[in-house]
Length: 242
Image (tube, rainbow, N blue to C red; front, top):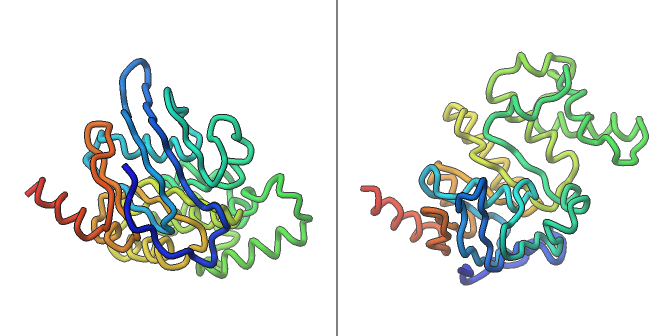
């Protein structure tokens, strides 16, 4: 299914910022998880919604190269996800629901800097970029704080900062606000929707957040069953679960 009316090109996006899936099936342990997925997405902000177990998280794991297609092809910004894993890792940043799964280093600054490992930047450039990123997220005063002792909202900010410092062309966020209170959920949502130059694919149960995207996809029972303008698609989804 190909969403209609692609958004206007965004100046912060590189040319060729398109996600394409053709005839994609995914089986895990012999069990079908996704079936017959076809899509072409060139919108800047893509929402993915659906009930638990509908296949939406597996869909995003496909895009990030974390799950291979059993059949069909997946191309992310021109990269075949099976053949171009190194290029895909450079192009895609993933933000998970639980930030503790992403925090690897003892302090905030060290954790953000760790994302630049292998970037080729010298130490001075790394220090400068880390400082700039922490300032952008309002975390400068926390640079030397123990990362695992932060609040839930601060941890999610840290996880996001550690992804965005690499300047990925595509950011995949898998239910990034689920564990947050309302204020922090709105803050993270605002960063993802309003501040990214990258293309965004966000899996969410927060239908207000989904409504702010340029296109929405709905999955059910392992299939992409609807795609299009978010307001209308979300209204239909609400009606199904009324």
